[in-house]
Length: 215
Image 1 (tube, one colour):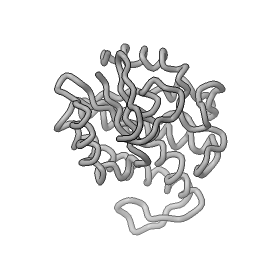
Image 2 (cartoon, helix red, strand yellow):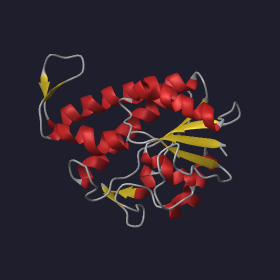
Image 3 (cartoon, helix red, strand yellow):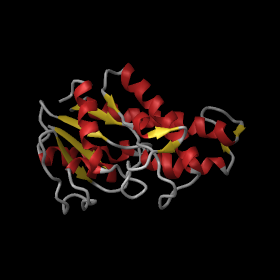
């Protein structure tokens, strides 16, 4: 079984169209391959701070040695936090110099993905881990910053960095971003609320996991 434990994007893996309530109130749902447990907002950048909370839930739901723990984080980083930097100046990582616009974005992505990898490595010492990539952005989702094309460009760079880190560490990375985004625009029919993946894409998702040898 693949247990997806994390932010609202874990809800897709319950097999239910409607957004599930956060653990422990929500019905996590059971299917032949996935179980989704939503635990509320949680960025990739700060996942390590919440690592023990995720581990406690993984233990409570019985993630075993033959199972996978899947981490679905990064959407909040790419939709809300990182795009803010298009409008402000900030310091580059490891530098005393101000950076602007997309230079600031690239620096923030590097910092956030490295922090995410610290959390991924923490879990990889305890479980078999899969990382679920950031999906395409809607046109104008709530609490978002930047345009759809800007958010998708950020998500694409974020996914590239995370996949590169996962590959170096032998951790499976599964993503449907390339299938759902063309020329910076998210294709129609992929999202249910401008943020979350449409359940009708589950057959494609299952095929991606089969191709990766994970189910």
